Every structure is written in structure tokens, then in C-alpha cells.
Length: 373
Image 1 (spheres, rainbow, N blue to C red):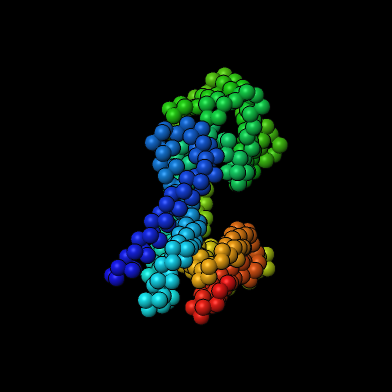
Image 2 (tube, rainbow, N blue to C red):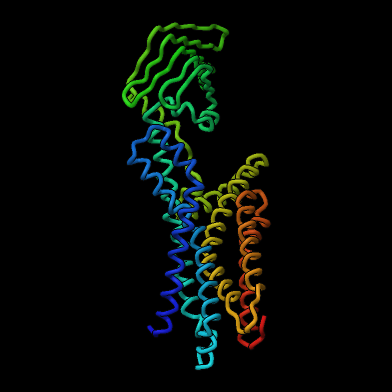
């Protein structure tokens, strides 16, 4: 490898690594609520540490492109301000030769970011949810505080008296439907207590409503059961496998299966649901490719806007950098919530890339011809 390549790639990667570390520290603080909530579930410190570490691959695909932008812009600005750019060009090194090692490294980072967002981050996200499910499965009261899961199962739970998350609840109301038997089980308990080994209820009343209008009422002074015995039932109530938990090959298989099912079922009502799921899966694929392209696009933008050939200080390059970066981030996060409008969603994901690359190439072409900006 030429000395010039080693020099440029070393400085570029050094700034990338420092920027990634800074962004990870910043983005992890934004996820402290999730980590604190997981710790509040009563998980041991080993699981809390594992849960926190599994957040890193999930936020790294966003931190890496921004780090590439900062690294390329700072490196280009330093080459210009220290007159190294002028020296290299006067010695016969063209602009394309100068930028080739950096863009090659950025392309490798884009490939790595694709593997990261498609394989590592999905596995990490899945493992984080497994850890949550594992902790909740050890304690029935934790599961009963998961309102979203209970709503999906049609279960109602409320503690009307004093309670402490995962330890005890008083004056509880629990309603469980039985669709196949057309029954509703209503449980009223004065107190519920749970631990990793025992689940206890005091002054319990069970009210069952039968199809023919009969009602059965059972009053129990004390009731206890082994928490591990409830584990199979609690795990049965677990969540479904969403698109952002799947590796890329599994995601493509789901996309193919949804497309095939869409053609098989012509019913209008069923078609709307299938179309929504199909568009959502396409959006997940587009999102991964969008993040994969970002390190290369942002590196090209940083180099194009950071290089200067004039003596006068200009803020135009910095303005273009901030404006296009803001446009990309706004479009990206907007597209994540637009599953129903496929065309607009794909435009928001990929149009900023075309704009960034087009403006960057135009800027580099002007610099190569000696036109000061």
C-alpha cells in the first residue's frame, strides 16, 4: 500500500473511531430509560449489563455514517488549511488519486454497515426482547404490568391499591376471556405477591360467567403456586417476530411469502392487510439499504464540502454539509412511519442519497477545474 494511502486511511479511521465512541456514549444516554426500566424489573446485574451491551449494535448503524461525515470533513479541512492539498496537487497527485483510498475505505464501511444493520443489530434487538421476556417470565406481576401485551391478548389488569413493580399489588382486578368456551374469568384479589419461586394471592374471589347466564363464584382465603409452574403459560403469551428482528435472508423469505399470499387471496378486506404487511417488509429492506449507503454518501459529502482551494475562509461547504445531513435524517425518520405509501417511503429513503452524491460530485468537479467556492 502506498505511503499516501496509509497516511490518509489511518487519519480517517482514527477520527471515525473517536466519533463513533462519542456518538455511542450520546445515544446510549438516550436509551437509559429502557435500560433503567429493564433494571427495575428486578433483573440481576449480569442481565442488566448484557441488555445494555445489546443496545450498542442497534444504535451503531446510525452513529457510523455520522462519524464518517465528521471524519472526512475534518480530514479534508486539515489537508486544505495546512496546504498539504496544494503540495500534493502541485507534485502531480490528482484529486481522484487523492480521494480514492478514502472512498474505497468508505465503501468497505458501507458493506460493514449493511452486515451490521441486517445481521448483528437484528440479532441484538431480538436478544434484548428475549431478555425482557425472560425477566417477565420469572415474575407474573411483571407480565401483568405489560399493558401492550395484555391488550393484544384481550386481558385486563388493574391494581387499585398501593403496589410496587414486580413485588406486590393490592386490590387487583384481573379479567381473562376464553373465546372458545365463550367464558370470562374475573379474579379479584386483596393482595398479590410474587418472587422468583412463589406467587401468592390473598382473599381471592373468582367469578366465572357461563354461556347460559350462570355465574360461579369461588372465594379463597390464601392461594399460592410455584412461579416456575407458570412459566410455560407466560412464555406462550410472548410477542410475535417482527421485521426488525429478522436477518436479511429471513426477511427476503418473508417478503416472498407475503407476495405469494397476496396473489392467492383476492378478497378486498384481506388484501388490505396483506398489502400493509407487504409494504412494511419492503420498507424494512429499503431502510437497511439506506443505512448501508450512508457511510459512503456522507464520506463523499464531507470530502467535497471540506476541501478548499482558495485562501479565503468560506462557510458555504459547512452550510451544505449541515443542510444535506439534516435533510437525510428528517427524511429517514419520516420514512420509517410511512408503511402505507410505498412510493413516498422509497423516495424519502433514497432521494437524499442521490442528492448528496450529485451535489458532492458537482463540487468535486468544480474543485478539480480550479473553481473556488
